[in-house]
Image 1 (cartoon, rainbow, N blue to C red):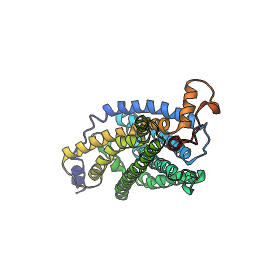
Image 2: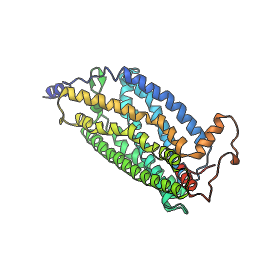
Image 3: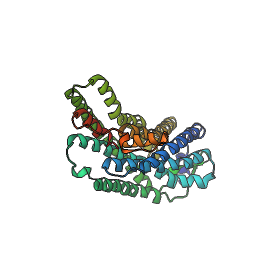
Image 4: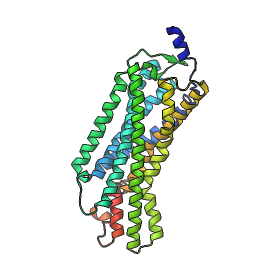
Length: 341
């Protein structure tokens, strides 16, 4: 009986011809670019004091992106068979979990950044509780603790002897039944996180864009050129977020159903969902290369410090513009992109 169940379980052989050849190269490109960009971002950010919740959230995104980047080499070696089965088992149990959890920590932090920019427009003349630095630090800490705690059972419950499919360890085979149930529940939970964060970002940036446009009209500035510039700034986060993460979250749930149950039985469909998941997951991973665009567009302090580094000259307080109190449009724009140095 057990043998027949095992044979039925592995009757559908996973097609890894693409994932074991193409994706290691694609992930290697991401790793090189992300390591360079995020190392530079970390070096710049940690020379800037954390005087706002905006800066606190951005620094935490950099840390999450760096940790996610450092898991990529293990994924590449696992997919190409370097290190054999022990490395594959290590990747399944530890580094893959860290890859996913840091991705969702980054997603939540991007949502908090959007909320922070929204509050800057709603309450431009005073700081609410959510805009205090210590609250930003506490929220960031809670995000890290909660997400790591929820991911920990995926490590602990991957305690079964590994089984092989097509000569390679199948990660879900290392999970107990409780582990499979937790894995499925965690996937549904992070789906709620993603779509909820996306809705929050659309709301916040739609409102911000409306306010900025109104301020340009009130100040009788060249609204057409100003509006184009503003839209580029306020929607870069939403665009990066949607392009990177939405395709993966469309494909993840049906793929999870092939891992944890028998709702999908056709082998061709299972392999198609596996390829779709791997392709969209790689697209999600490109976010670690695109997040630095957000820093450049939305954080003037980061932008000024980076330009000073690239031009190899010291940054003085007078090198960058300050907010003009007589122009509502400039004030609103400064609140949107973060405080100037």
